[in-house]
Length: 385
Image (cartoon, rainbow, N blue to C red; front, side):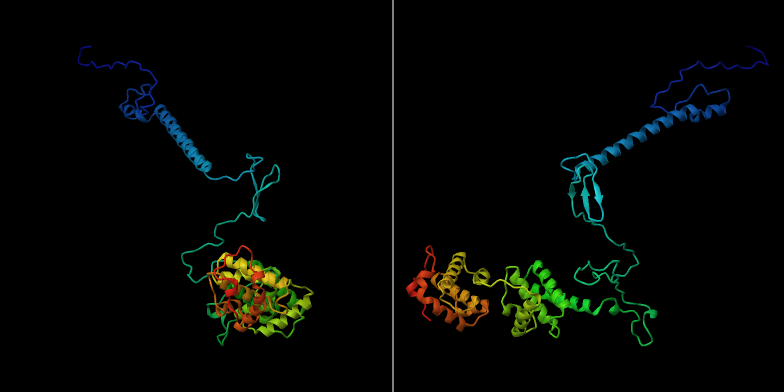
């Protein structure tokens, strides 16, 4: 159009499709574009483009969650899983009191004694290194009257914990009875003696039970607890089939051999029990092992001692002295020779005792050796003491 008052009329834009590709979520939406230039600037934030942007964002988040779940599932599958052999798909039930994993279908205990490896206490940055973070005491001891579950009071640090004379106001003396305190001291002494001669835990437990029975009966009132504990250890060793000599028990305790022997007889009478008689075979393997003798010499010494007892060649002799004499004879006939003093130090007997027992069995030496023994020194060349 022409003229002074003419105005230019914009032609309306050609209609375009509403569909926009997902790869361009910020593309202009032509349905919302009007004649106003402000609307043209804000066309990228219109509701249509915002809807497309949110759809794509949710799709990405859903894909990420699926990937994380698959990764965690693969890690769990790689770990060893405890399952019931009869019902592998059953969810096991944990008994927290007994520490067992139980199958709910058949009741089978799949895993027992499940241990919580986590810390029982919490550690804070301002705690001192000397502070004990544990809120519980030692394990329960069934041998004590209250199970050793008494409260133990920690050492005070503030001024309110001490009286005007500097003595602690709170003490642990009253938290444990005198009988429990005496038994605890005896149990510690028994454990110390057992550790010195390398005795297993089952012997320590049997010794503790014997001491508790004797202490509660008060049949050995007036005897020292250390002497009673030493005698109980000697009895426990014999009852468990690993006997020790009185000298060995005396060496790890502070009690004389005579006192241990007296308590030993009194305990057997008080408990109305008995122990098996010791034989030469009870000490043979240990003595030969300590002397570093080969297996052939040990078997020969065992045969010699057994035959000497069967033929009644050593009447009234201690099994320890007979075993020492048999070891001496077997070692002198082999290449691994040991002196009387070396054997006496290990067996705990004097050289004279070994010689006396050896003289009793020497005349029948050809009948005492096993038939398959390989002599390094002939029988007629054995030393005559």
